[in-house]
Image (cartoon, rainbow, N blue to C red):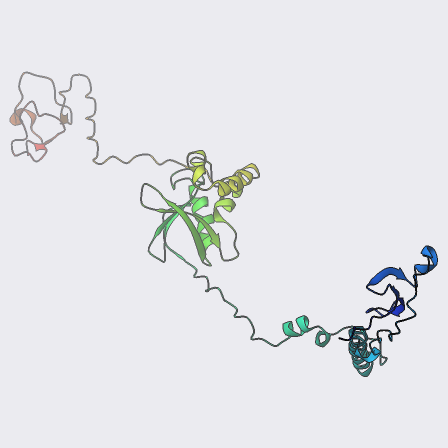
Length: 308
């Protein structure tokens, strides 16, 4: 049986290529780098056994070498590519573009334009039957009432002016934002002309509208209520015509009062007849007009003339 030769103690390159001391059985902590600091006593020699030291791995087979080669190759390829593509200034140094950034390049890929949604055209309404300054029937068949602002009636002061103001405001068409229904079935709304101006606010600011129902129904549209508050605070005093009330015309004519008879004349006859117990036509001798109760019974046929 042949003994396996052992490597004698000595300094040999380890697996990392560093010179390290082999004590004959294992690697020690002594390296060429720390030997000068430790300086151990020299180990015993083995003159009777001569074995060749462990051969160092060829440098071409070490993985560290190939790792460095691969990294250097990739860096060189990248440098060549950058140098082959000049920037806008004509030299090798340039700013990055969309093509250099794969993320930005993906973003730059042409895509179909986003679909644009168009809002339907606004349909304007028109006045079909105006009631007064704050209510009317529109071209859609609905009756609308201005919200939170009140206009005077036709027979009230400024009623005609408020009606005319509203009619002029709505002449070119309008849109409604209905938010409630009143006890008469009318749609309560904020109404705007085609420029977006609010009639509710404009009527308040003109001084032709008042706040009769503002507090009662403010909760239905608080935002509109705040704007009307501001408009009423800035309202001007309108120049409205004074309402002249006409005297009532009686349904039937009042009966004419009989003229007061002269002294010693019987009531109900013209010309005067004397006051006696009884009087007949032969005693009178001429026709008379009966204007009263005909106490002498002269008008027998009832045509208003006696003794004819």
